[in-house]
Image 1 (cartoon, helix red, strand yellow):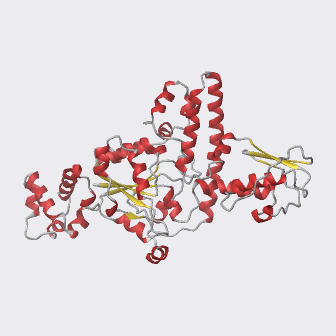
Image 2 (cartoon, rainbow, N blue to C red; image 1 turned 45 degrees about the vertical axis):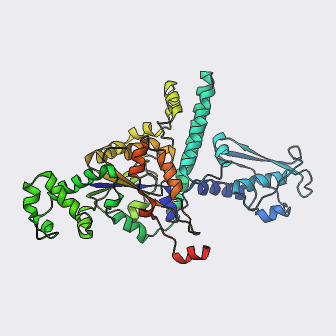
Image 3 (cartoon, rainbow, N blue to C red; image 1 turned 45 degrees about the horizontal axis):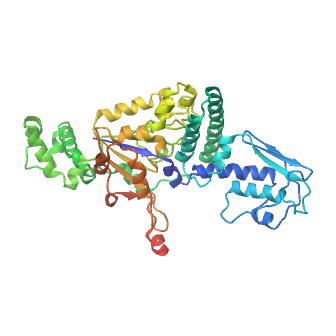
Length: 442
């Protein structure tokens, strides 16, 4: 039997890599603020410490203009709050410069977005993960379904795709810089998870026979001496080469609770690391030479496997409406279309068809933007178990329940979901918080 380890963005964040959507968008606005306001801080702005003129600035996303008159001043400024994001602070600083009662600055300023999609996601700074930005793109795409004029609709979807592509390119630059400047280290808990057995108690009830059959068939390929060491009282050579399947399976079931038996026969024969990130953290820190690795969404700065950034929920009702439009521009950033640009998806299909397997998730939210692929993995006949490694917060709480709710949307067969998904009591945090931290929070 095999195992698939799904690696998501939370895996990188657990290793100190600032690869989250919020990290990306905040970094952009911190840099922009430094350019246009010469490093003004929130405290200075709050105290009306506006002395020097701001600087004009322009990039592919925004245009910041400085005027030497008060034509653009507004009468009601607002001020930065303690929980403001860097984007909020830029807007507040713009308001302060344009305040008509501000006697320390006679001019005015104007911030204009050249990329409307980037304006939209900048205003959604409560988002935390890549899946959310992809959801926002898909939401904008679905809004265009309401446009009846086909010419206007085509123009709008092409504009949205151009704006989305600009965000993707900036994202790749940002992630490359993050990887280059961040040092990562192994976590024992993650290494243990990579090396762990497939515990019989984690296997779905409806898949127990497949589980036993898999062990039984694999034992026939084991070295005779190694097999006999398990139980010298039984002639395993005869049992596994001459007896009926029922007798072999009876032997497996009888020994399945034995820890030594589990270590030998419940250890995955093959492990596939299914990497949804564009980074190589899992490969560099935990992968063995024998592990198979698929960068399903591509890799940074790799022409052979360019990054795939878009949406992948063909199960959504609106997706069928999109296909019926006969407008290929609507499908430009649909992941299932992009998967055909490499052999990665076909390689994955070959792995899941080969033998029974358990899926474990590490740092993947299991959100709708990967729903089609995840549904294929979870509901496949060879999938015997789905186990999540959840995020444990410093106060002792965790996101297990949230993950399960997300994961449930990837199942059409709800009874199968309830059977295959491993209960929390048998799951573990990806990186456990030291006990003293959780006790202090209580």
